[in-house]
Image 1 (tube, rainbow, N blue to C red):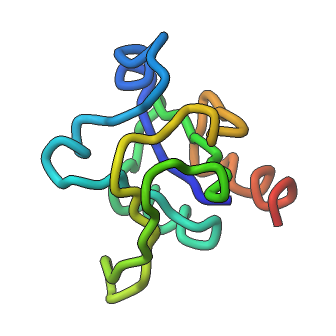
Image 2: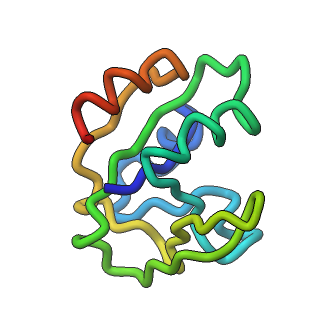
Length: 110
C-alpha cells in the first residue's frame, strides 16, 4: 500500500469523477504519495496543525498510471504517481486523519 494525504475540500472538488488529480498534480506533473514508514515525517513537515485531512490508502497494483520511486526529502525515495489516480485503486479513505491516527494505521497495514 501507498498513501496520499488530501484535504476534505480537494476531495470534494473531485467528487463524482473516476480519477483524482489534486492541484499539485497540475503544477508538478505527478501525485505525491508515501510509504507507511514515511507518513509521520510528511505530516510533521507539511501538515502540522491541520484538521481537514483525508488519507487515501492506495493499492499500487491497481494503478493505471505509472508509479516511480524518486529521491525527495533527505534523498529518500518516495512513490510518485505520474498520471491521475484511478479511484478504484483507493481501497480506503480515512477521515478525519491526523498524526494520532498513525498507530491505528500501522496496526492495520503493517
